[in-house]
Image: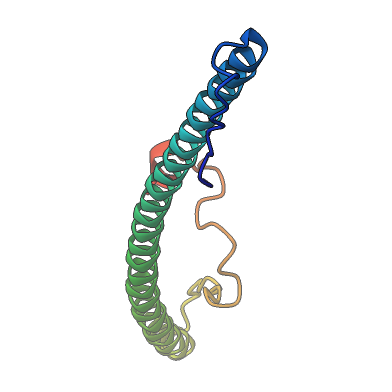
Length: 145
């Protein structure tokens, strides 16, 4: 704020007009100071609110990153387990085919009519359910993390 010069006229102190003008100036100056103080307080509160919001958003961001990392790790684990199960299914399918061919040869040699069911390829038709008559049930808890 600039310095305020006070007029010192010997006649102004007794003149009511000058006293009224000086009083208005003083009231305006006080009002401006109060307004500036309120403005500074508002800006300080806004700054504090923004700092708090930044802190909350950083915490939420950290939690989301942890959740993503945990989900990614779980996905990798499940994918690995799925690959093991697929390899086991392929191995068992190959064994079953071998046993079926042995059974077919044995049936031809012994002249018995042996019915050998077709072996579905689980890797080609993996979307087909083994028991299509059974409904698949799911709860909301399955999808919450």
